[in-house]
Amino acid sequence: MANRRKNSRAKEKETDWQERVVQIRRVTKVVKGGKKLSFRAIVIVGNERGQVGVGVGKASDVIGAVRKGVADGKKHLIDVPLTKANSIPHPVNGAGGGAKVMMRPAAPGTGVIAGGAVRTVLELAGVRNILAKQLGSGNPLNNARAAANALSSLRTFSEVAEERGIPVENLYA
Image (cartoon, rainbow, N blue to C red; front, side, top):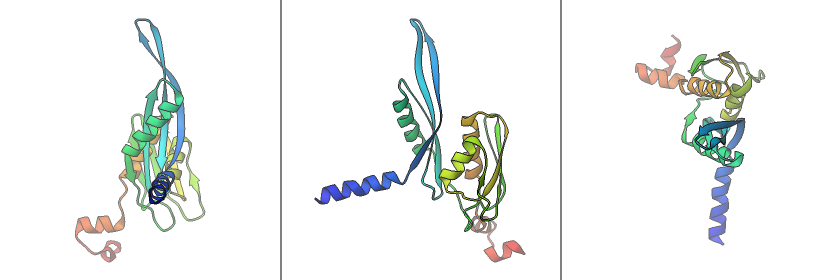
C-alpha cells in the first residue's frame, strides 16, 4: 500500500509540468535507397511557476518525436524571476538564430500580448502580464529560443543589489 502511494505522488510531481507542441514537421533525409522520412517536434515544457524549457525531438513517428522533445525541454529548463504582478522585473531583449524578441513588463490585467511560439513560452513560464514582440525571423524554433534567451537574462532587484554590494533600498536612490 505504501508503495502505491509513493508512486502516485511521483506521478503528481510529473503532472504539474505542462507541455505544448508548437510545431511538427515532416523532414526527409536522402539516402542511397531513396528518401528516409522522420518527424521533428518543437515542444515547450513549463510548470507555470517560473520554469520553462524549449525542446526539439526527432523520430520516425510523431509520438516518439514529441516524447523526445519533452525530454529535451526538461533538460534545458530555465528559471524566470516573476514579480508580484506575474510580470517580468525589467524590459529585456533576446536573440536566437535570426529571430529577435523584445519583452516589456506590463501592469496587472494586461494579459500576455505576444504572438506565436513566444506566447506559448511566456504562458508556460507563468508570466501573466507582459508585452512582447517578435522581430526578424518568423521561425517558431528560433523565436522560442530567443524568448528563452531573453527570460534567462532577467535579473531581480536583489540580485543586482548583491552584485553591486549595496542594500536593495539604495538602488532607488
